Length: 302
Image 1 (tube, rainbow, N blue to C red):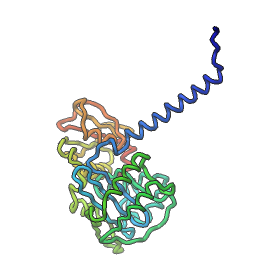
Image 2 (cartoon, rainbow, N blue to C red; image 1 turned 135 degrees about the vertical axis):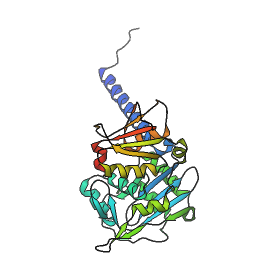
Image 3 (tube, one colour; image 1 turned 120 degrees about the vertical axis):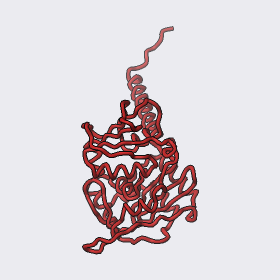
Image 4 (spheres, rainbow, N blue to C red; image 1 turned 180 degrees about the horizontal axis):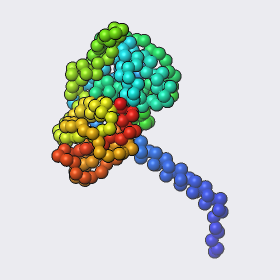
């Protein structure tokens, strides 16, 4: 019996189908790898920007949860060289610059801790709602915003379901409210969010206990001192000890983490994932980790 050759057209279709399966598999793997579900964070912080500006902080190991109440009437310091800007107009700035990650950097700088995710309207508005002693915790609305196509977010679909689950299982009384720290502008009397006062009042609230216990000392080498100060606050806000800031003797494009030993470190992994840094092994001059900052990351955090 003679074998019949499959038409060439079938080979082409099989090839296309195989490529599609591999591509979908790659996308799914990347989503899983970057998802908070598998990163095993001690705490996850999510900024919701809109008619109300709040940050939800979920304690995954200690079950201590915070809700940070913010006011659109405040002026805030925005990393990236923008200086002070009204909170209620932050969405307009994001739209103009076409860089939604400004939200993540801004809220991270405000609380001196890493904000993992943000949710914000795609259509920019100017909001004017003041701060409140008891910010509303509306589960249905928050979950709806996670999946709404009218919102910007840096979550992938797996993250959305996971964060939705965290929101759904908690009640208003499960949160400790953290209030804004305000100072008045000496010239015009405007309310300005004080990062220094907020850090002093709530230092340690956003620590990752696993990073604290690992106890790795970090040195940051910079070309732009202002950027190094901001990043050091955010990194220390996770429980990582920043032992020193010093001028850099290297030119790097974004950032490089140098560690002494080629072993798994939760601290190295956290910094590399959070700030998209490369990792190398080498001498670290008496500390456990050296983070070399480059022009790209310094321009974003100055």
